[in-house]
Length: 181
Ligand SMILES: Cc1cc2nc3c(=O)[nH]c(=O)nc-3n(C[C@H](O)[C@H](O)[C@H](O)COP(=O)(O)O)c2cc1C
Image (cartoon, rainbow, N blue to C red):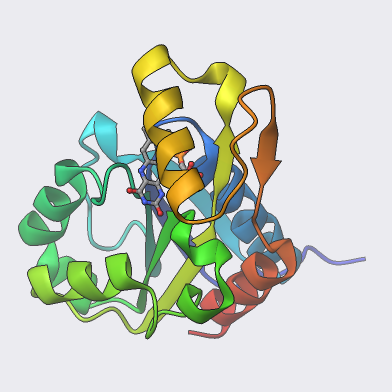
């Protein structure tokens, strides 16, 4: 058997607070790798330098915390907009509002829409995925803030639970679309 041809080098940059966005990135990576791509994951917190020529496609994924992606995400996009636009590119947001069927597409998710209005970049492919609430791992203030938000929005409020809302088949479909970009 010959060596499998690498279709494209895909760089995935992520911003996470509690690690769930990384899990989503890993699933996108597995999907794209199974299709013959080479995938590298980098944390935006480490201030990665985007060297044109070192990758063919770029994906950025970030989670929402108290209504916003981390400001570092906006900074990275602003700094690298030219590089982003000169490569096939994609963006996805992770938040728990996306657990609601009427808010789980790029067009209907309020955070993603607001974010797109703030940045100059128009990603070629967009994704929105429902995240995870891991009550036991949260500190006192965050735990009770999230319980309050969940109570208001009719979500789970049991502080002993970890609830994952992510539709992994949707994540895999996004991975296939990235591969087709
Ligand atoms: C402190 C805190 C604040 C959050 N704020 C929001 C929010 O305003 N809107 C929302 O839809 N999800 C919110 N979430 C849910 C996160 O987006 C979700 O837990 C996601 O999986 C986090 O991804 P990460 O682990 O990669 O940071 C919040 C979560 C935490 C822990």
